[in-house]
Image 1 (tube, rainbow, N blue to C red):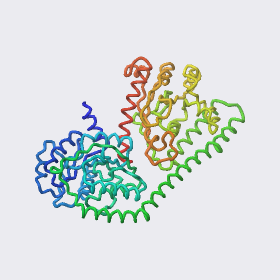
Image 2: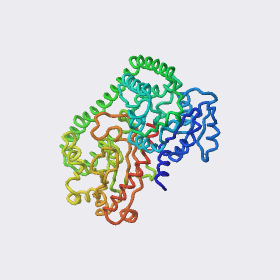
Image 3: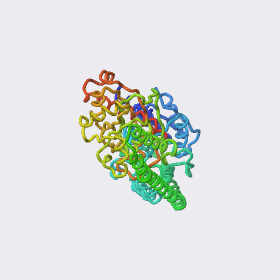
Image 4: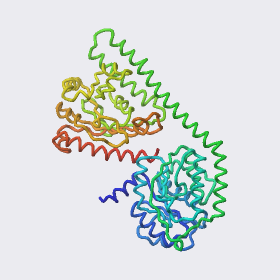
Length: 503
């Protein structure tokens, strides 16, 4: 499969289509549409009352686009709304919009896809490169600066190019927002309303082509359209005071309160409930195998309670376990690592689990007493040094949880896998169970301080015996780590594509 084919499938997997609103662009629409189809499998063209044969041209294109035809010219805003409506009916989550006059390059669609992967749920704004150097009229340059200024006033966010038509819209976040306008200025209104409703706005540089004046087809009416933009900005400024800014402040307050509540809940339970109870429980009588197991049962119960009963505010947690794994047989559990939140889903799986921790976790004053008595071990001591303890734990029925990356991923990519987990599996002769977690790094990223609303999902995959892993990935632990990392990258991408259509 070629790189372009992979890209097309990625766009479809993420629920991304292309929408091209057009009005009397017969000279360019065929080229623009064909080039868009070369980049994306799903293209919708909205003919806004075209009278120049555009419809016939599009109908004759081989493997042509989905055509939405408006009987009379109603303006770009109406054309976009009809395009969005059609895209939602077809099940798409995002729409890339570009103009039919040839100014935008469909070849930049991969840039919009990459921006969507980095910022799922965001409205991606295609900032035209070399904007100040383009051969445009003084009025056009003033209009863009004018629009940028008022957009910053209305939202508190600055964008360098608020008049670009090259954008990626998160359709489900725009659905239901009623527009005041129907023409050229509707694109500005869409961005302002999206910002007020908490949609992140992200710049993405794109190329632009301005044809010679004699070839240019423009439907911008300087007098009327500038007057309409001025009226719209006046209304939006008023609404920003009574609606937009109060809504943003309320959203920020709720995020702060959600974070504080979650942190205090964890701190109180760790310092003032779990640690004292563990001290008291272990203080009296001999520390037996049963006592150690009961400690694990408490950790398991608390994790299940927080995740599945009490819940973490803003997080929706789900699991998939299509192979019916019950963890009755010891194994090495491996998982990608993104956030402080990653540990809780693992502890909620089974009481019979030991986690290999980082050194700072082992020394953490809040919960070090609990995890040490639960026989968690620091991976920094080296696998060979702790192998006798691991062997004893496995013989007692415990599974070993390892994060092969060794540290949380800052950009949510799957980092290099260390060989320790595969060394344990081979040395002790136990299976490996790969588990993929999605969403924790979005909810609470590395170095992040605020807890965001986000879906979290843990996927439990088929266990692999050492011999099966050797057959699939290679005989050496280095080969196995490399192979498994590649598999994780593919599987994580598939999960992200599925969940990020609904964020």
